[in-house]
Length: 626
Image (cartoon, rainbow, N blue to C red; front, side, top):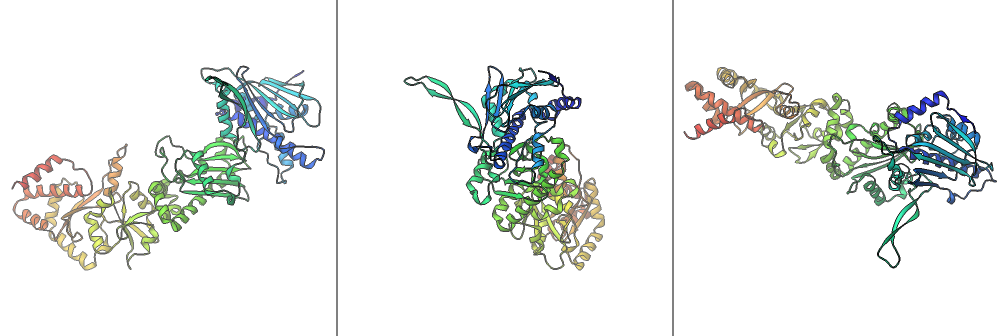
């Protein structure tokens, strides 16, 4: 028995892979089971083309045995096996893949389905084992062979006694260290959990002896015994024909797989043929996941290669604004040995991700069009995510998402789309008007809103912090700009009306300047208006930052200290206007107090804080006591 050395590049690859490529050690079992499945595939395929090879498909299986006392895990298959040369070629050279070569030679045959690549994946065993032994025998040879290695120093191959055709891989598990608990891989329950997680949909039975307990006959004592069980379910739900899957099956799979107690709002199951072939099974939840806005929440879809889990959450498959979607993607063309870093640059994955994004968007559009009630339920939970998606990255995705957004309408008294709003605008109206506030009721009572409603102009009510920022970045819809009702706009008044109020403000220029100075220039200006119906005062703004945006920005942890350029508007038709004029002529000191009270009143209406509430309270009490 001669010791054989790995090639220099193989040594480096082995060291690199064990120490960096596979940070998740439990995938070693996934790799070995996938290789076993491939070996069985090869034997079964040969039986279809070689009449001298007799195989009963029901006898094909993979066995996993855990021996805690000897610290071994054994994976056995009754597949094609390997002779001495194949052991040397496939296991002696890292990334030399017998499975890959077999697939390439038979790539035009539809019934070939090789999921592993002997080579890199096999060596993941050395992440948990300090010695690996492979015993194998082919159908064509009476002699079996044993391959054995303790790692990068090399390997040996020698004849061995093996009665059955197939391969047995024996891992001697490393001793537990302070950094790594290798003992967990000697726990039957842990191994069963790993199999179900990664290899649940391998097409052949994966069997283990599972410990059971029963009462001893005639006593109250219990005894342990072992029973062979098939661990995996074998057939993935998503690979079945859609017409053969019931709604209950879809729902039960979702609840079991993604730990939800409720059925999903929407199920999206699709298979794509073409340049890249893949199947996706996506779910839109009915409610927000409990940890959705937790900093530890991780978006992503499960990624499978022909039924074998590659990645629990592949974030590259979903844009952030669809991060609430749960589900999986299964592609026959992806390699099991692909790393997270390689995935980020994988062209196939980018194409799949784009297709999935378009599919989700299309399904949401259909839900909006054909099932408005359920879409509104969806939007109540996930609308903020769509709004943020339209705003984020300087509005790069706004055109994709703007038709999915809903806002409450002042006239319809329900949620509406931009398209629905535009379909009802009055002739000559060039803007889409909105107002922001803490709630629909509070917005509805704003003085600025009253005059628009009085003229029959529809207003969108914005109640989420992100709303106004989203509209600002979208800028317009169907050629109509978004305009805050708290900004001065020419469409609300006729030219004659504007001339009248301009003259009023010009005639009272000194009075208004005096009030501005009395407020220590906290406002950009003070002016009279005819827009208010019953309210005495209101705040409007000039410039990009509105009053609502100021509140949002300053409520953030990194206080932005944002300031809206506010204007105090006074209703020229209200009795308070007469009082102001009278005080300007008779008692300017009193007018200063009035100015502070009116400005504070306007701030309270907008939901803004008063800088000195004690002073204002004392002023109000002073006038109440007169």
